[in-house]
Amino acid sequence: MLDFLSDCDWAEVESELQGRGVKALTFYDVVLDFILMDAFEDLENPPSSVIAVVQNRWLSNGFKESALATAVWSVLKAKRRMLRYHDGFISHFYDISEHLSPVLAWGFMGPDEEVKAMCQFFKDQIMGLLQDIFSFVNVRYTTVEDLAQDIMTLTKERFETLCQRLAAAD
Image (cartoon, rainbow, N blue to C red; front, side):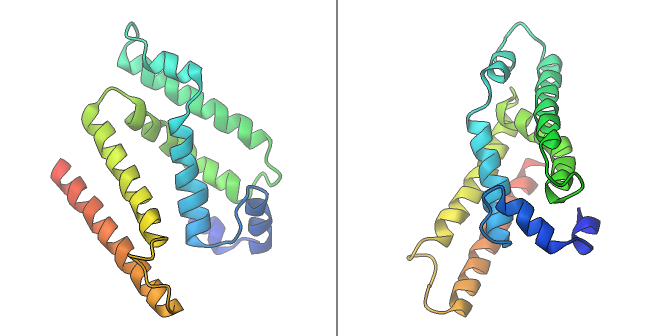
């Protein structure tokens, strides 16, 4: 992804992402909204077939995890066929998603309560950051510099909280 972004046609990337509802090429719009918030939304409403497999007490956890990974890969493969730019930003994003999404889906929906709690904590921190960014109590909307400073401070605080939680989980 980094190689792609270092030498890509940004107009093409912008066009591709605008087709997906991304308003601007900003960290908020691309990473926080398009990638993370959409992923959290997808995890809240998984297909009924996925729920049926994950909640089936007769199946082994290994089989459930494998079935979930297969379902995720199938969805990504179907989405990949619909791409306008087959070597564009979304294609590279899907390359990453093929590795991360099954693991995260299993973390959120699997039987390991500690992993599930960690995934939920991560989600809560991201959603809390988003709420803080748009809070007149937590962010000064007086100047661009004040706004940027407050958002950076909030982001660093959330990052530090996540790091502390991850360190405690070791």
